Amino acid sequence: MHIPQNTVIAVADGTKLSLFQNEGTPLDIKLTALPQDEIDASKIASGARHQSSAANPDDSQQDEDGFSNGVTEMLNRQVLDGRITSLVIIAAPRTLGEMRKGYHKQLSAVLVGELDKDLTGHSVQAIEKALEAA
Image (cartoon, one colour):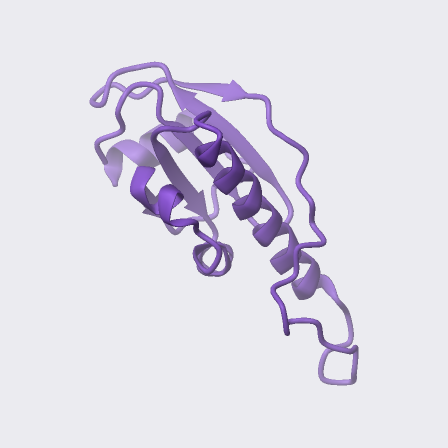
């Protein structure tokens, strides 16, 4: 994947988010960790709240969806504020699908690419290799 210099890389699953910036070149990716804003994990899509039942004994999936929506909201806000001008999102497949529902049109405009892999908890080098191979 062609990752321009200064592109922000968001690596997420339903419970964790890591942000990086490509300090290298498009062909020689060098990721540096970035601080991140607080994530509001209460962002459940409207109509998505379900009561617990025997078929849904816990709320863990709902919590993960809320976190994913909170990550998307934070990324939207940073794009709209001009803090992110180029973005790659790497997320577990289900998380990525949930996040896509909330993309602002401006976020879509600066989105360089997506990678549907769960790389949270992996080393920076593993993330760099996955990006270079994509």
